Figure (tube, helix red, strand yellow):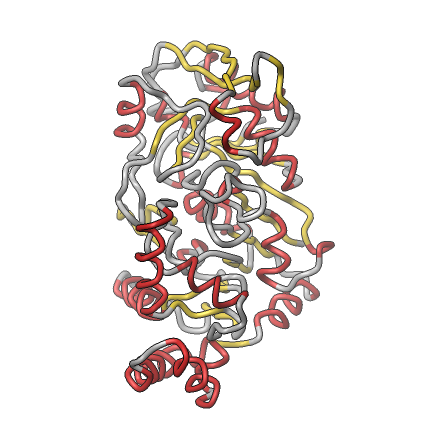
Length: 405
């Protein structure tokens, strides 16, 4: 059956590390949406590696990795990513497959992204993601399957660019590199499913950046939530039996848009520096907020989460007090759900509850040995969300994951 890893916040929850940790239990790992706007960080052989396209299961030698049809691909960046992995001695051959239905990010998409950002100020990564998805839904995009269809290439590029020949040469070069990886991944994944293979679906970004359910318009251009798995891979709903929600014990987001529990004191810088809260793709500072229970309830609801994985608990070590946003008050009255009308956030107040902090977690090798203050904090999250916390992470390495009994 299939397991889905979903970010429950505004991305950067640590899904790459979680995927790397869990992937030893799986035969196949799949990226189902997004593109190089995501940066999944994995510690491999003592080195920090950032993956933008390739699933984080690539570091496990027996795991097959798939880039699904819901993704958009920058051919040049994907080529560089493969090269860098091969330099580390990681075998890619026969282990990485790319959907023939995945759309391609072209240089003119990045140009359009820059122009749109100047006027809309959404806070995008300027990687061409939005314009590539716009072409996809406008039916004027190019897919990996189109790389061998010269007529289709000419037809679209004639409309889209003045440098048609240059662009065809660019695409032809990369087709030669990727041709052996481009296949019908819908048939591949369903074959794996029907033959009893264990599949892990790895999302990019987080639920609060979902094009439908996030803080629109300050969102990504795809669906990181559960629906993106089905449309981004072509697998049936009954093939998924486990949904793991990944969250940090505090909240972050990059760029503009609401962050109801945003910290305005020097504690924000302390958390940012200790947690290295800078964009893996852009290097931008992430805004920091306290844990937001109403937001997490909303994200858990829309995704059908049945397990929680809390990352980065070590980042909060040393704080005397830790606040948690307990509920939203709109004009003094409790508010259910998460508002679609962003102007309401100007009138929303957050009611907080306070927890005692904990000291260093260095050397802790079981959940039983963690400080009581941390256990109280984790238990509170579990009780509020009504979902079991199965794992916590207290450091950067694979070995720093503890199973919660």
